[in-house]
Length: 240
Image 1 (tube, one colour):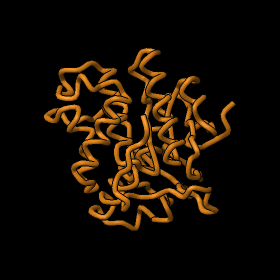
Image 2 (cartoon, rainbow, N blue to C red):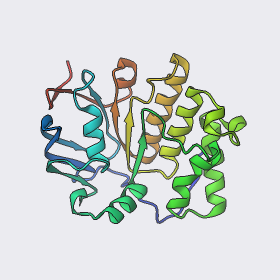
Image 3 (spheres, rainbow, N blue to C red):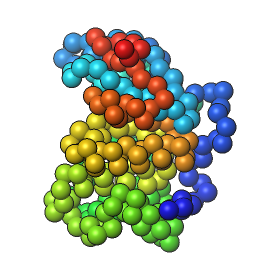
């Protein structure tokens, strides 16, 4: 299906690579209960790059994703997205920035239980003030792409786990963010549904030149990425 345009004032990504990274992480440290989790993380990612972040359970992958996405404030270090230092934003400005530039696929979906599938997918378009007709067309396109047209008016509690994850991915990409963060997006899916989600993430990244950070234990998921790094003992290394 051809892509449906949204408002021109949504964040645009350059057609050719920029000399400046879309994402830059500098000397990031984080702790939980005084225990170090991240120990001096440095990372850059350009528009259209897809990074698979691997490592054992408890190694800090989700923590790093949350720091990049502005959900957690690191103990030390800096995160820049489009040159904007997230630590320099107050909570209201950070929320606006995240709504506009980031799309996040959470491991446990985080769909709003009182909204239908259609309304969940539509929500980021409402928050970024996309007009009604363009909003409807974009949601229809995504419902078709994730195979949920027939479940559009169902509540999250009325659909399967695989369908909830597909809805969560559609919501994350609806406003065409320039940075996608996905935490084990295929962890609760069977092989067929998982492959469809990976295909969609790769397609959206290519179509919109969106950068993708994908936390995964799956070699199949990592295979859609252009780079792979391993997080171990709070530090990033090249994946074996």
